[in-house]
Amino acid sequence: MNAININTLQPVDSEIQTDGLPPSWRETTLGEICSRIVDGSHNPPKAQPEGLPMLSAKNIQGRRVTFDNPRLILADDFAFEDLRTSVSSGDVLMTIVGAIGRTAVVPENHSPFTLQRSVAVLKNPHIDSNLLAYFLEAPMLQNYFADNAKGTAQKGIYLKALSQTPIPLPPLAEQVRISDKLDALLARVEAGRERLERVPKLLKRFRQSVLSAAVSGELTREWREEEDASWTAPAPLSQFTELDVGYAFKSADFSTSGVRLLRGDNIEPGRLRWREAKCMPPEKLKDFEGYTIRPGDVILAMDRPIISSGLKIARATEQDVPSMLVQRVCRFKPKPDLDPGFLFVLLRGHNFITYLGDKQNGTQVPHISAKQILGFAVSVPDLNEQAEIVRRVESLFSIADRIEAKYAAALSSFDRLTPALLAKAFRGELVPQDPNDEPASVLLDRIRAAREAEGGKRGRGRPAKAAAGSGDGAEVKRRGRPPGANAQAGAEGAEPKRRGRPPKVREAVSEPDAQPAAVPEAVEASAAPRGRGRPPGAGIPQASSFEDALRRLEEQKLVRTQGTRQVGLFGDTED
Image (cartoon, rainbow, N blue to C red; front, side, top):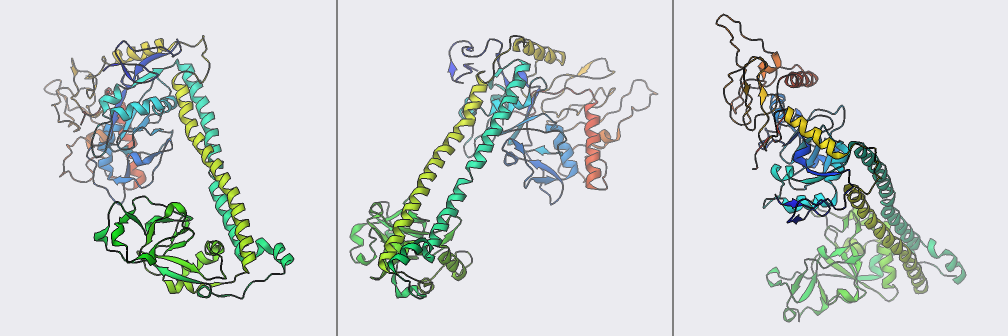
């Protein structure tokens, strides 16, 4: 691996650069500071209607572990898969397939779960878990993960590349200060974002209130009293406007250039959009001039007219022409006593949207007919009041538009704020250094010493040697064997197992007349080799209920942790 400048995470030709980092910090790698890094199951068991949860990347959201729609697996499958990940409180989880780089810290008293391949478990007993999770989401490391991801259909970061990820190591006391500071600052950022995200709903309510006041006459009541004006009695819309429905142009004549065809997909609430527009050669439209769109035309989608953001109605502008009206899209042609601008106000009101919602038919694609549209009852003021209503609505809407623009700018600032804070923390600029802190070099020496005490530095995918208990020698654990899979003391001579399979518990024989060594029930029950024909319940003793199964799983995990196992750096190879 090339030397890494921790501030830019770009390969350099010299030794690792320390420029910019505080003197008490050290540069290291994830593989150096984590006692074990492993991903979840590469071959998940069959999903069940009931069982224990096996989570994936979709369950790591907002720096939290969620249990929304998890894969549920049988208890014995869970016991086997848990040998691989053995998730514990304080572990850092990171998504490594698809959406790479989302993190979460496993909380205290968490519900039991295991993982699929898209999530990695970083066990780090020597550093602050919250800080590690924050550092992994810093922009420099996010760029590193993106640059080192492999794959075609769905990119992922291999465990080898993950272990080689360069990362700064602050003194332990400073780690806590940085983590606490980030907790406080990011909580304020999220609170501000939540308040800011109320703005679109408030603006939507404001615009609807303006439209309701406009079409009911409340907006211009004082003006009307001064002018001694009045409104007509309710009458069908057909008395005030005609309707053109678009033409069914042959799709075989569509092209990527020429005159744009205005389809329902091109209409959004309040505007037209032309992404992925279909076109027709001009020479094939000579006989269809009556379907030409003009600036100011009011356009309504007849298929699925109402969507989550509102009614698919818009008014054409100079930028929207030339274009042609296509089938299942209609254009209003107001009569002389109806101002097109007032018609646009009238049709965006709550009453018309409610009317269409009740009248539209069809299940897969709701549709509204021209006859139904023209049957909507309306009251209309004289042309002078119509013009005054349009003026006032546009004035109030322009205020809402300016607020919306400021909202968008503020939201963009919030989006940049979190990465900026994480970057400052990553560079050691977020909190002041304390000269009385124990340097990170001492912490790093302790981590290395602890590794040596466990059997020396372990390579990727090869767990450390484990003492054979009362035996004379040490048994070398095979690559990929889940931690805790060895038998208790006295189980020397266990035969090698295939990767990922828990070993059978062998009887210890010290003398010809010796009795077989006692084996705890949970270990004995999980010792049977796992295969496709494995009988149900072979992984743990038979449980009488879901709660009983959880209790027995915890007992089994306790038995494993009390054995002689040593954790390995990696639980799988680079697939």
